[in-house]
View 1 (cartoon, helix red, strand yellow):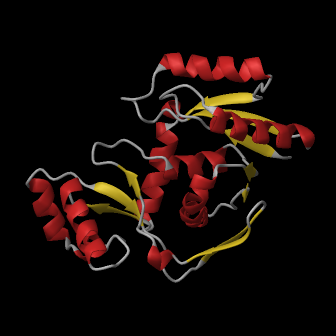
View 2: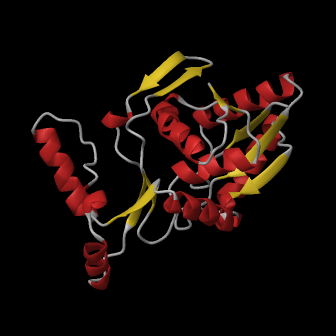
Length: 228
């Protein structure tokens, strides 16, 4: 069965681009006798507001885009933690201790040399003693997903056709902040697996995210959805 999802963040009102994405997902599911799911991406507690959740539901209802089910990411943290712990144990997620200022300086140096601002994986060279010393000094790590540099990322996009990314040219994405809050990338992939999503219709701005998430699906031992 075809399963699509619309996953807005309740940090503001829906705009035309959001509605376009919702419409495509809804129509694809309905045309194929499938299910259309609404996922509220409210992991950002500081910016998410209940009034915007209500507005999202109201706007979709007015447009006739009625979801078959709704889930909220803020209610799924235990699930994310379990997957996160498994990826840490497998060596696919690792702690990094640079501050935002240190990372910004690294990016500026690379750009000044005419090089792409790719994270240098300095955190992977730290010894256990060095990590313990940093944490003893009060430095709390953020967490990155370790890309497999030996596995070129390819997929057949239903709109764009064959796609290929070299993971060597991409930074290991941060998946969890130092304060423990989640960024978009990993929870989204986990939810697509757990919700049985078969097709993801997303905006052009998410194409590079797709490349990163494909390795996350692989690391979780899960088949990825089709992307368009």
